Image 1 (cartoon, helix red, strand yellow):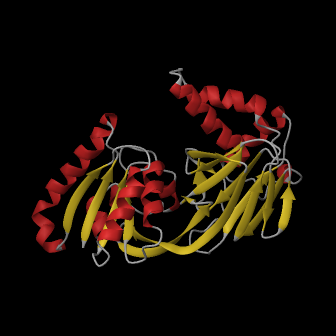
Image 2 (image 1 turned 120 degrees about the horizontal axis):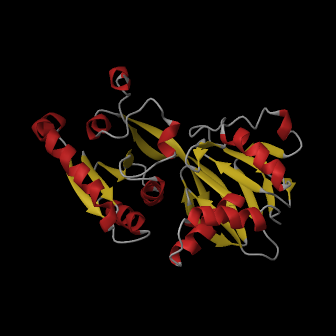
Image 3 (image 1 turned 45 degrees about the vertical axis):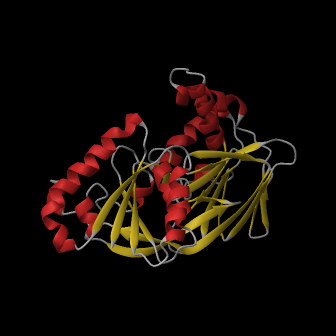
Length: 309
């Protein structure tokens, strides 16, 4: 089998390539044992990983290959998006140089070792399709997506601490969003604080937004928070972050939770944002579907308990 390491080509991400090459050199004595081939691709910009994976699969239909996304959730999303429609190919994740929420779904697996990826096993995972784009972990609309969008705007302007600025702006302007959500034909509401569409369980650097979600059940976990006053939102936020919101009585009148296969999201007038594994896509209507077992994923070997000591 061939393993293609997909690495962000930006200069500030050079440490990732250095670590990949270091691990490959350490494995050099075992190449014959693994009977594998290894190559590296440095991306040239946003979306390039998706284009490369899709083109390579088109040009090499019979080749056994595993694309390894090296970095955080953005790189993982791009590789997974390019892999959709190619059931004979697979992917994995080498989580270095990035803080991935996706890999936290598998806490007993070592995503930092090429050796453990080679020694791993393939499983079939679901992926969420949003219009013509994809979310491998969590999609979101409302407050969270607006925070990301505002932060991106401040980054482009060269402002300091863009994420904190984005949160402050969203607290002022994105807590009462006129967005309609319909899950499997059931209208959940037309005003919301935020709405999570989850395949995985964790997003936003460790927030457990969908504690019951499964990446293998063919369902999207929909968690909609109704609008609320600022003081109440700030009071409930730690509970939500810990993943205790589905059972907590304080959320009884402020949360709607469903599992669905198809979701329609729309805004009659305003342009809204949807976050796809942290990347923001604007629009007024989004059609969301689950694609069951669409991604062949190479799960690394389980962590050695001795490594935890």
